[in-house]
Image (cartoon, rainbow, N blue to C red; front, side, top):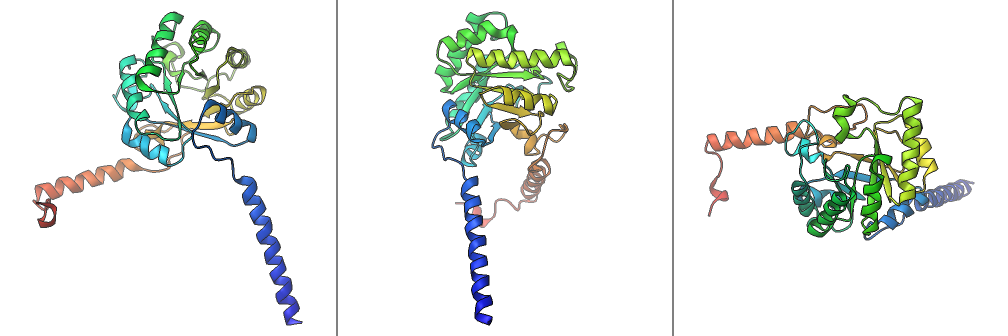
Length: 296
């Protein structure tokens, strides 16, 4: 009788193990040696969420790529977190190319998108194409990103005509901050929501490979993601999109002042780095560093 219960327990355990293995196998997504626009589309079709972070330099990009990130955005947010400007507007095309070059040298797997800076594509599609070509040729990046919908249609079409992949960006568009006058949630009203949906469909029709939705109601983002075939990446747009993007300095807690509702901090590096530097300063002042083992 005891043997029967042992045998039954064994088979129950085996059944549980087999079921767990099946569930585990179902959750394992296709491995991509390199992320491409096609791979991102496959990920959306398979229901695999896309992880995207910003990076602006070689060292951090190398860590992020090694960690398995799908997309690195060389964002014009470098204007804020790297240069200390209040807005994204001051950063130049030359500076964006410099940051993109540094990131490209570091990565082996992820897809790298570079923001077109303010003034490089609005109102003149020829300038937009020239700026995009410079980014692609001089940095080796894989795609460009720009803000806006129907207003930038000509620029999107001309960039795409050169075979350069374009990622769109709707909702809260930081380059238009002086027009909005605030960083509050966009498209809460029906008219603006309908325009956003129309712009999203237009960008897909024009040939954009993906779209960022920033700081809009979650239900609206859900509608857009369901209506479009291309991947939708959200930032402050809820969970019902195809992926998420955060600014690396924010999610690592390096930028301690920025605390929006949508931000989840995965580390709190500001006090850790500060303490380490204070420790170093103390060791230098007290002549504890370098010691006998730290010299030649």
